[in-house]
Length: 94
Length: 94
DNA sequence: ATTACTTTTGCCTAAAAGTGTCAAGTCACT
DNA sequence: AGTGACTTGACACTTTTAGGCAAAAGTAAT
Image: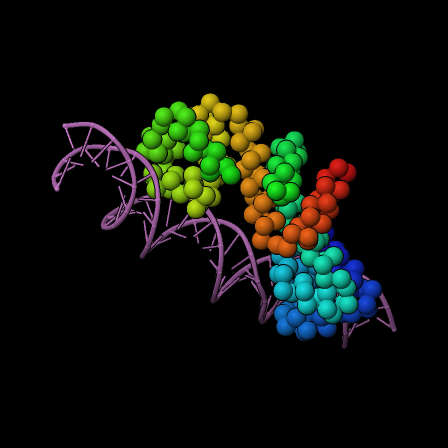
């Protein structure tokens, strides 16, 4: 999810992997993998990307966190995951 | 959460760490840490515990998954986490 | 207070996961 | 065929995790 998002942002801005990777000070290949979600995207890199693309950092972060939660949730049975999310919700609004 | 739960179950059954650890084939200290959430509890261990304590494995699993989600969520800003959970919810009911 | 036992703590190691590079490869265009 | 953008795979390094072992601390019963 977050990978697709930052790829979309980059393409909208008409930037090359090479250019963005240079700002992040990482290899082009690494950024390519991050956009395709082969490798994880670090939080600090995401924040820098929001800057580069002039995007809402909070929106991106929310997606990034959602991805992490989905990774947990999707590796489990659906029924159980729903139950778990209920528990989480209760636990949070305390 | 899950640690407290399995400790409660063990105490209700009047079993010692030593006894339960033996069934799981792990060290007593390790189980002690799992109950106090110092170390993570593996899924297969949890399933064995449900067996030992004759508890509902699904109920335990839901708590266990909830713990994993909470770990992600609590390491982030509250506002963002709520947003992220919304995204997760949408994503799931597709 | 000593003994006998349970539980906790701290330190250590092996295995796994995460982070990123480099070189070579593919693809599209001219 | 050559160039530029992107992808792939193998590798190296670092960090995290899982768990064991031994010593320390807590708990009862004598």
